[in-house]
Structures are given as C-alpha cells and as structure tokens.
Image (cartoon, rainbow, N blue to C red; front, top):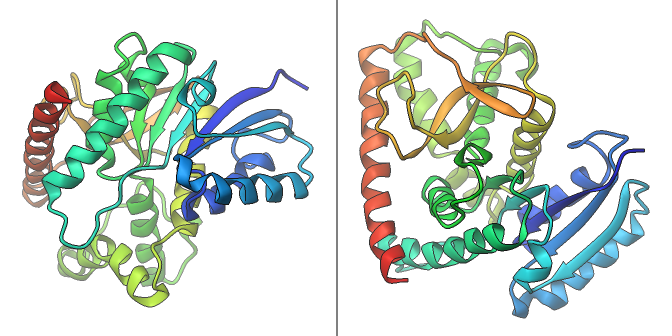
Length: 304
C-alpha cells in the first residue's frame, strides 16, 4: 500500500458530493491500492448535514479510507492537499443577476485560492466544479500564484459526456463506442444535438425537480481519474484549462475547454484538429463571453 493522499471535496454536504464521495472512497478514482484521507468542507450552517455524510462514509466501511475529516475551517481543509475538488459555490437564486452570482463566487474562490496558496502542497491538482466554473477556476488560480496554473482545471466533462451519450443514442451504440467523434449529419449536429446538450441540465431539473447530481459526479470522477492515470492511448477528452499559447487562436489568460491528452499527470492540448466556420464562430463567441465574465470578475476581485 502506498502513502495516503489527501483529497478535499468542498460543498461536501451538497447532492453532487453525496453522489461523488463513495466513488472516491471505494477506489474508482485514484485506484484500488491508493489509501485516501478524505477532507469534507462546507459552510458552518451545513455542519449538521455534513455529520450525517461523515457517518454514512464511516458505515460504508471502505478499506481505502484511512480518515475522513469534516470541517468548516479552511486551515484544516486545505492543509497538505494532494487534490482539491471544489464543488461548492453560490448557486444562482431566483431574481439574481449574473453579475450578483459572479460577485458572490469571486469572493468564495478568492478565499479558497488564498487557502490553497497558504496551506496546500504546491503540487496540488485543483479541479473546479462550482459554476461559473471557468471564471471561478481562473479566480482561484490567480489567488494562488505559487501553484502552477497548469495544475488548475475546471469541469467541462459533463457536456463532453452528454455529447457522447446523444451520439450513442442516435447511432444505437453504447457511449463507450463513441471516441474522438466526427459527425456528418450537419443539420442534426447544428440543431437538435447542440440544443439537447446545452439544455440537458434544465431538462433534468424539470423532470427530477433537482439538478443533475449523479451525472455531474460521474463527470468529476472521469476528469480526476484522467488527470491521475492519463488518457487512453489515441483518445482525447475535454477539460477547462489555461489558454496560454494554445494552437486554436483562443486569447491567452482564459480558462477554456480544449481537447487534451494526459500523461504523467500533465495535460497537452491536441493540435491540428480542423475547425470549420461553424465551430470557429461558436469558439469565438465562447471566448468573448469568458473574457467579459473575467473582466467583471476581476473588477470584483480587485475590490474584494
């Protein structure tokens, strides 16, 4: 057995974490021979709920879990971390404008970035899930200047998985058969496919009366496992990473989703993919939105 790694999950009393923690604890993410010290962080009013989650994890009797720590204190939560999975964020409430949501989250992720800087290992891998994930991730990275920005990534795997699933359903195959896919059915691709993937989260909420937690947790597991063990030979995945020096003309200093391969815990952007006019238009629009969001967030950051 190797030495235990310290893994933090924030927003640990929430429903995504509830679907995520068992998979981390049972070896599905970091391997069946990797002991884990699992650290659960949430805000003080959620500590009662978090105690219930802690009890359940204890009752699972998972042999790889060497310790489970539930806390509302950043100095405890971020100490000596190997991996930080930042799930918790301020959700959008009714009547809340986008800039209000950004302002609240900039404050949270500035604090968490500063806590990573102060307490975590410099080799820590940071995965941001809480929305708006790209800008939250950039905020955390800027607030932890001595941790390499390549160590920060945000979750875009859920949309990646949703896209795979839609293609698999269309073709009547399993999702595992869909890899690095190229599509020829232009009208379906530009219409129904994009709207289904984009609006899938809203469709789940409408049907379930709760947001998508199981599929989000699965996407987090996929994302973290690929960072830890690398991507299979000949396959690439989607991941929000720093855009500096990318080959696709996306402006620097944005957290942007790229196709990547991963080896030795280091990602590399896949080069040479053909970008048609339709894709270019969508990519430029995304970059513009992220740049605007960054600008607004950084105004708050300088005054926070």
